[in-house]
Image (cartoon, one colour):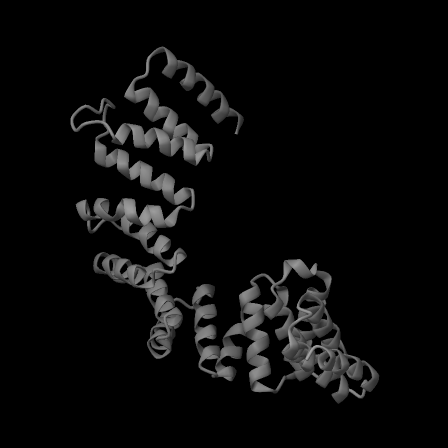
Length: 304
């Protein structure tokens, strides 16, 4: 932003004239606000490297300065570094949720799930009804294969926080992974999967429908709306598994020809995927499009 660029220029000039800790600190802050994280972190590192008792910033001690530095690490998306640098810091204030919460988020982002669970539990000691900590703990249980525990916790939370769409999504995923397709569909339908707002929700809904192998009248409408949304999007914008799930859901919804169109898009993106090409060939044969099916079978034979 222009105002930050102007402030940076003035502070750099002041730093050349009088390189004080206070000016360096102000510049570090301005750089972080302007998303120049690496430059900001260099200045924080210089200040924190000073011998104990020599830091000259009114109202700021080394602990406060380190808190600011780790915040910049978090804003920069350097989550592994954030976890490392904040480990000792959080020991000085173990009940400080403002320190625990970003550690939980950083651990989740780096898939350090046990660390995330530890941080969730520490937050819940202070605030037993902390919604994000409760949700994250259940999410970590789900992602580490503890599906029964995750479902039990998520079912309780979904009743307690019925407006939390992220909870509904996680519980839907838990049911899906446990092949409880009907329960998954009940939840995922509520999240309007046909809007493509959340690809994971859309894919989960389509996969649950394929798993159940039955589509209601509303599901048929929903799948056709979803297919229309997928068809309008550039292929590169959508993950291949979502396109595949939508194609398979179309078949369940009774629109095999349209499912073929999406499967062909998928094959064009992964031409060496033999299982995918075989699925396309089998569907074409099932629909009586034998010449097209034969072409794909021939490609598979030639590739042996």
